[in-house]
Image (cartoon, rainbow, N blue to C red; front, side):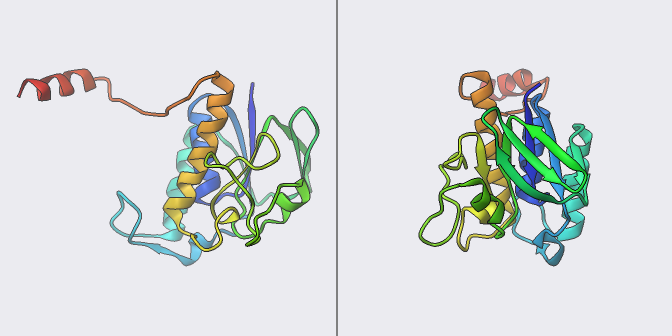
Length: 194
C-alpha cells in the first residue's frame, strides 16, 4: 500500500494525515507535540466559534485516530532521507520507510534543508502551489513555506493540498475529496424544484 510519512503533528501534519488516510493511503505521523497551537485560542477558524488550541488539537487527533493513522505521539524524527524509491524517516526507535514525505515542522526547516530542498531568499522552503518541494514526492507545509503567514487554517489547507496532490499522483488524475451525504440527490433535487 502507498505510504505517507508525516513529520509534525500540528494542523498541517494532521490535515495531511486525515486526507491521506481517509482516502486509502497508509499514513504515519511523527509528533513531538511541540505545536504552537498549545499557546493559541482560535476565534478565527472557519466553522468554529471559539476553541482553545490544545482542545482543537485533541479534536484533530481524534479525527486522524478514527481513520487508523499510525500516530507516533512523542516520537521525534531526527533525520529524513530520499533513497530513490521513497523516503526514510529516522527516529530513536529506528528507521521508517515511506513512498511520500510531508514535512510539517513549523518554522523549523532543518529537515527540509538536510533533505536538500531548495530554499527561497527569505529562508523558507521553496514549494509549489501543491506544497511539493524541489525534492520529488516531498512536501513542506504551513510555516515551512511561508515567512510570516502562520495561521492554523492556512496550515491545515497546506496539509490538505499536499495530501490531495499525493492522491492525484497515485490515481493518475486530479483527485477531489468532497463528501456528499447519501440523500444529497434528494435534497438538491427538491431545491431545484422550488
